[in-house]
Amino acid sequence: TIILGIEGTAWNLSAAIVNEEDVIVDVTHTYKPAAGGIHPREAAQHHAAHVGEVIDELFRLFEEKGYSKSDIDAVAFSKGPGLGPCLRIVGTAARMVSLMLEKPLVGVNHCVAHIEVGLWKTEATDPITLYVSGANSQVLAYEESESGTDFGKGAYRVFGETLDIGLGNSLDKFARSAGLPHPGGPLVEKYAKEATEYIDLPYTVKGMDFFFSGLSTAATRYLKENTNSDGNIDETVLANACYAYQETAFAMAVEVTERALAHTGKNEVLLAGGVGANSRIREMLEKMCADRGAKFFVPEKKFMGDNGAMIAYTGLLMFKAGDTLTVEESFVDAGFRPDEVSVTWKPPKNT
Ligand code: ATP
Ligand code: FE2
Image (cartoon, rainbow, N blue to C red; front, top):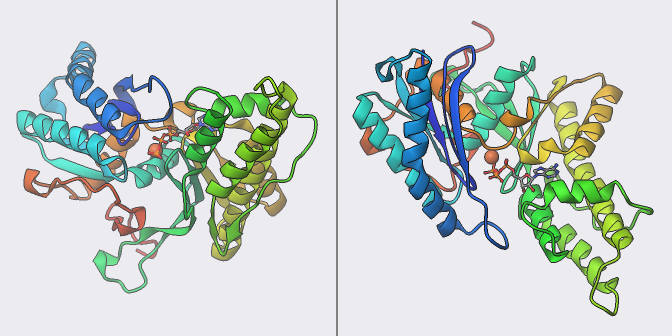
């Protein structure tokens, strides 16, 4: 089975063609905001301007490898969640490719795709997934359906999630307030290494959910209060804020992940999403897993941030389960939750 997938929920426009074994070809064109954070309309304009050339290049590379377009069985696209204007561009492009190839569409949930690509590209089998990206922060795990409805299939249940903004976006917002360019996450990681002391920042976990907005505000306030009279921020002040930010935010994420492990009795943890590139969050999860005797899995970096391969691969699983859409059914959904998806492609355990 060969599936073409297109991702473009936010900043990264990325398309790939995969089969069961691996990525055959992939092409990415990334939107980089001129200043500030991601502007939804600008990102959509970027995707609209480049999606044609991305698909052309993808086909060119595919044919260069000896395949023909008619080898493609279906066209998968990220149906949501994401920025509405971006989703609509990607949805339109997918419909056009589907009509051109005369092959069905598969509408993929972006969060589920982050998990499935992790299962594909690591040895994890039934993990608790910590999915931390720009817009999303969730702790999820597969749960079989108890009622036996929905063909006996289960769903990825959300055990905990952010109730305000995503961990990545909160890092980006804080970094912007320090005058750092977008995306701020990697720079915060870099500066944190130079810290000299720990400062107290608000740690907010309520039940199984977390909040990152207050943390970002408090860290920003700390910078303001410690800005020099000439308007500059000392390197050490910035480093200490970055360090405390990471320690606090990641400890919140790890706490909820650990409690989901304890609650479900599962013994694997999978890290997903762009923030997963951070070596400190990996270290903290690794330690928590070692303490509990759980296994910790991290896919290669190119499969952690948004990528077309994760959409194509999840599309492949869904296509094989008969989970396809007609053009009329192929609307996008900016608020599409992973737990709304009936996981048609996993056989129930006791069969
Ligand atoms: P989603 O649509 O799933 O929310 P996204 O569009 O935000 O995803 P991702 O690639 O999953 O895209 O994640 C991007 C985020 O990851 C940004 O907020 C960025 O700052 C953050 N990030 C990237 N590298 C690091 C790092 N080393 N440390 C911390 N955060 C990082
Ligand atoms: Fe993502």
